[in-house]
Image 1: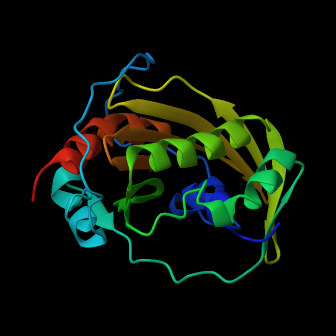
Image 2: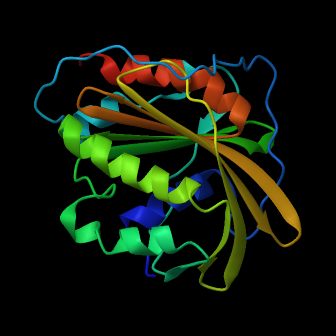
Length: 229
């Protein structure tokens, strides 16, 4: 299976860990934990999709995260073929890419941050905007496919990564919620990354990183994503 929007979601947490050198993530002092109950979210009024420029203004920044965080330069696009081994559901979703069922949304923005002195305490945010139906169907299909495969492998270039996926309770935020824990194994090292997605109206917020950081900053990310600029 070649790299697609489907696989991009599965690998989006690689923005917060080295592709060929996973490490145990840690939580810096002061990071709190958000509620984990999964209940119906608050309704948000629908409107036209936001432009990528507006989404960029709604991303978290260093001042939102607090002292000690540095924004990482945007990584160059990788052109290596990505292959998923042992997860037929993800391979099947790849055939739906052309229908827009995956996260191939044209209006998007992304930012990644690292905590000073601890390069393994990182958090990444992605924002997408489209109709509520497209966002819901796209993220829902991908997450369902991923959690249907508790373990599989991903190859990218010469790297081989063992992956584990576990569904976890999402906080009661927004209109719809999805959350999972992704375990990466490479070169004898392991990393656990949490990935939580919240849809609020026509905006989809995805926060990935060490579990403590995702829990600590998800609410703030959602609040800023809803703000008017």
